[in-house]
Length: 350
Image (cartoon, rainbow, N blue to C red; front, side):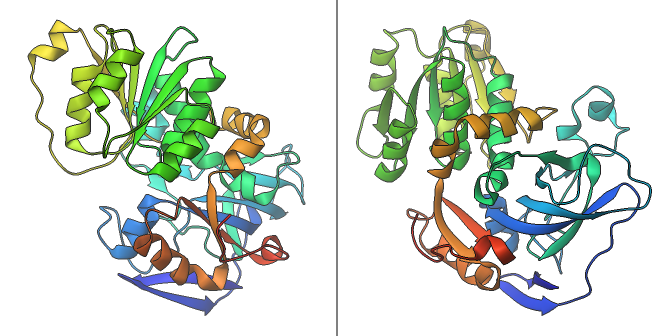
């Protein structure tokens, strides 16, 4: 089979290698589509905290089942298309023992700690596979990023009574928007890119604010009648934005931080008690992957709108380079593998 191997920073090779074999408790999948995300870019550049070489990247993916390891007798069937939850928790640490395997202290993620899906075939634990019904490969590959947005909305306990602000309208921010709107919340989205804001408006945002030339604080306070939003989702990882979230959120409000950064943030301590804030981190998803499949099934057109570009497997290096060189154009870039690539208008904007 063919696989794309990251052998060193900004060095990828398309190689021919032996096909994997499904062991006990595993299924062999023919990979169909793989989404690239920010962590893939950092792994490619070499500045990801978990990077090791050589590595086969790719953790947002789907495939069809070709075979099972010896002894499998569960409900999955050969030929089914499945979305893959790429998390491999240890099962014994404190968060695992308390139903939070998404933040396992020894968590392994396919495509980062373990071999990922930028290959024609992959062997995966059957417990990580979720049938997607009649979803096509493109949509099935996006279940994983949608699960992150859905988990964040669950963490934030969003209800139909809430006014919600999302800072950052990349794919994860848009997934938060979809999940929050499904709960009936009113949503305002902040970003600096008009293309992202236009998409957010299409996907149900009541108000969109361009932070590059609009007064975000004034707009948010006006929209919330001076109260501040009940929930703010921070999906940028920018310290100044986190500070602004603390300043703008309503008293007794919630802040959910999804954005990643190694930077430090300085905050006035008094705000935590004066407002009695609830500040939450949100990582991956915990036990809601099947719900994410259902969300994608209900929101097919909206989820497909997240896709900006498609490339075949052999052009993965070009896809990553394009995403790095054109950050304002590349939203969700998909790698289509094998039959999934047939008939698609690849290398073009969606």
